[in-house]
Length: 168
Image (cartoon, rainbow, N blue to C red; front, side):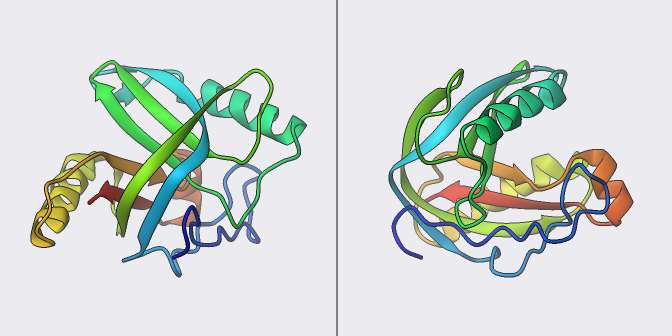
Protein backbone atom coordinates (compact mmCIF):
# COMPACT_ATOMS: atom_id res chain seq x y z
CA UNK A 1 0.00 0.00 0.00
CA UNK A 2 1.04 3.59 -0.48
CA UNK A 3 2.49 5.62 2.38
CA UNK A 4 -0.20 6.55 4.95
CA UNK A 5 -3.00 4.66 3.19
CA UNK A 6 -5.28 1.99 4.63
CA UNK A 7 -7.77 -0.31 2.87
CA UNK A 8 -11.14 1.17 1.93
CA UNK A 9 -13.70 1.04 4.75
CA UNK A 10 -17.01 -0.09 3.27
CA UNK A 11 -19.85 1.38 5.33
CA UNK A 12 -22.57 0.74 2.73
CA UNK A 13 -24.54 -1.74 4.89
CA UNK A 14 -25.73 -0.41 8.23
CA UNK A 15 -28.77 -2.22 9.61
CA UNK A 16 -28.24 -1.04 13.18
CA UNK A 17 -27.85 2.73 12.89
CA UNK A 18 -24.68 2.21 14.95
CA UNK A 19 -21.82 0.25 13.34
CA UNK A 20 -21.82 -0.67 9.65
CA UNK A 21 -21.41 -4.34 8.71
CA UNK A 22 -17.64 -4.74 8.29
CA UNK A 23 -16.47 -6.01 4.91
CA UNK A 24 -13.08 -7.69 5.52
CA UNK A 25 -12.12 -7.76 1.81
CA UNK A 26 -8.73 -6.15 1.36
CA UNK A 27 -7.86 -5.95 5.06
CA UNK A 28 -6.10 -9.27 5.70
CA UNK A 29 -2.37 -9.61 5.05
CA UNK A 30 -1.79 -5.96 4.21
CA UNK A 31 1.40 -4.01 4.81
CA UNK A 32 0.76 -0.49 6.07
CA UNK A 33 3.46 2.18 5.96
CA UNK A 34 2.83 5.25 8.10
CA UNK A 35 5.04 8.34 7.99
CA UNK A 36 3.77 11.04 10.35
CA UNK A 37 0.21 9.85 9.68
CA UNK A 38 -2.32 12.01 11.49
CA UNK A 39 -4.60 10.51 14.13
CA UNK A 40 -6.97 11.76 16.80
CA UNK A 41 -5.86 10.31 20.13
CA UNK A 42 -8.29 9.41 22.92
CA UNK A 43 -8.02 7.34 26.08
CA UNK A 44 -10.52 5.11 27.84
CA UNK A 45 -10.64 3.68 31.34
CA UNK A 46 -10.76 -0.07 31.91
CA UNK A 47 -11.14 -2.54 34.74
CA UNK A 48 -8.84 -5.50 34.11
CA UNK A 49 -8.87 -4.74 30.34
CA UNK A 50 -12.66 -4.43 30.19
CA UNK A 51 -13.55 -0.96 28.82
CA UNK A 52 -15.64 1.21 31.12
CA UNK A 53 -16.23 4.36 29.09
CA UNK A 54 -15.47 3.35 25.51
CA UNK A 55 -18.98 4.08 24.21
CA UNK A 56 -18.93 7.63 25.54
CA UNK A 57 -15.41 8.35 24.30
CA UNK A 58 -16.10 6.96 20.81
CA UNK A 59 -19.39 8.91 20.61
CA UNK A 60 -17.60 12.13 21.59
CA UNK A 61 -14.85 11.64 19.01
CA UNK A 62 -17.38 10.74 16.32
CA UNK A 63 -19.44 13.86 17.04
CA UNK A 64 -16.33 16.06 16.85
CA UNK A 65 -15.18 14.43 13.60
CA UNK A 66 -18.63 14.82 12.04
CA UNK A 67 -18.58 18.49 13.08
CA UNK A 68 -15.19 18.90 11.38
CA UNK A 69 -16.30 17.44 8.06
CA UNK A 70 -16.75 13.73 8.70
CA UNK A 71 -14.89 10.53 8.03
CA UNK A 72 -13.02 9.56 4.87
CA UNK A 73 -13.79 5.92 4.02
CA UNK A 74 -10.48 5.69 2.18
CA UNK A 75 -8.66 6.69 5.39
CA UNK A 76 -10.71 5.01 8.13
CA UNK A 77 -9.14 2.92 10.87
CA UNK A 78 -9.24 3.10 14.66
CA UNK A 79 -6.17 1.60 16.31
CA UNK A 80 -6.66 0.52 19.92
CA UNK A 81 -4.17 -0.83 22.44
CA UNK A 82 -4.10 -1.30 26.16
CA UNK A 83 -1.45 0.62 28.07
CA UNK A 84 -2.36 -1.25 31.23
CA UNK A 85 -5.24 -3.22 32.70
CA UNK A 86 -6.81 0.15 33.54
CA UNK A 87 -6.17 2.39 30.52
CA UNK A 88 -6.36 2.07 26.72
CA UNK A 89 -5.34 4.35 23.88
CA UNK A 90 -7.32 4.78 20.65
CA UNK A 91 -6.02 6.40 17.48
CA UNK A 92 -8.68 7.51 14.99
CA UNK A 93 -7.29 8.10 11.51
CA UNK A 94 -8.25 11.59 10.40
CA UNK A 95 -6.54 14.25 8.31
CA UNK A 96 -6.60 17.74 9.74
CA UNK A 97 -7.46 19.22 13.08
CA UNK A 98 -10.61 18.31 14.95
CA UNK A 99 -11.59 20.92 17.56
CA UNK A 100 -11.72 19.52 21.06
CA UNK A 101 -9.51 16.51 20.27
CA UNK A 102 -5.79 15.78 20.57
CA UNK A 103 -3.98 15.16 17.27
CA UNK A 104 -0.87 12.94 17.11
CA UNK A 105 1.18 11.35 14.35
CA UNK A 106 2.25 7.74 13.93
CA UNK A 107 5.17 6.41 11.93
CA UNK A 108 6.15 2.81 11.30
CA UNK A 109 5.61 -0.24 9.14
CA UNK A 110 2.78 -2.58 10.09
CA UNK A 111 1.16 -5.83 8.96
CA UNK A 112 -2.50 -6.78 9.33
CA UNK A 113 -4.48 -9.91 10.09
CA UNK A 114 -8.26 -10.24 10.23
CA UNK A 115 -9.69 -12.26 13.11
CA UNK A 116 -13.29 -13.44 13.48
CA UNK A 117 -13.68 -14.55 17.07
CA UNK A 118 -15.31 -13.38 20.29
CA UNK A 119 -13.58 -10.55 22.16
CA UNK A 120 -12.44 -12.99 24.85
CA UNK A 121 -9.85 -14.25 22.32
CA UNK A 122 -7.94 -10.94 22.43
CA UNK A 123 -4.95 -12.47 24.26
CA UNK A 124 -4.70 -15.15 21.54
CA UNK A 125 -4.87 -12.48 18.82
CA UNK A 126 -2.08 -10.54 20.50
CA UNK A 127 0.15 -13.61 20.72
CA UNK A 128 -0.57 -14.53 17.10
CA UNK A 129 0.35 -11.03 15.94
CA UNK A 130 3.63 -11.21 17.89
CA UNK A 131 4.42 -14.58 16.30
CA UNK A 132 3.63 -13.28 12.80
CA UNK A 133 6.19 -10.52 13.28
CA UNK A 134 8.78 -12.98 14.62
CA UNK A 135 8.13 -15.28 11.64
CA UNK A 136 9.17 -12.35 9.42
CA UNK A 137 12.47 -12.15 11.29
CA UNK A 138 11.59 -8.99 13.22
CA UNK A 139 11.01 -8.14 16.85
CA UNK A 140 7.39 -7.25 17.64
CA UNK A 141 6.73 -3.54 18.14
CA UNK A 142 3.43 -1.90 18.95
CA UNK A 143 0.35 -4.05 18.43
CA UNK A 144 -3.03 -2.46 17.86
CA UNK A 145 -6.50 -3.80 17.17
CA UNK A 146 -9.21 -2.29 14.98
CA UNK A 147 -12.48 -3.34 16.61
CA UNK A 148 -14.72 -3.01 13.56
CA UNK A 149 -18.06 -3.21 15.41
CA UNK A 150 -19.29 -2.80 18.95
CA UNK A 151 -20.41 -5.98 20.77
CA UNK A 152 -24.11 -5.21 20.17
CA UNK A 153 -23.61 -4.80 16.40
CA UNK A 154 -21.33 -7.85 16.19
CA UNK A 155 -24.15 -9.89 17.73
CA UNK A 156 -26.67 -8.39 15.28
CA UNK A 157 -24.50 -9.17 12.22
CA UNK A 158 -23.45 -12.58 13.56
CA UNK A 159 -19.80 -11.79 12.94
CA UNK A 160 -17.12 -10.17 15.08
CA UNK A 161 -14.30 -9.03 12.83
CA UNK A 162 -11.22 -7.53 14.46
CA UNK A 163 -8.17 -6.42 12.50
CA UNK A 164 -4.80 -6.91 14.19
CA UNK A 165 -2.18 -4.33 13.23
CA UNK A 166 1.39 -5.17 14.30
CA UNK A 167 4.49 -3.04 13.90
CA UNK A 168 7.30 -4.89 12.13
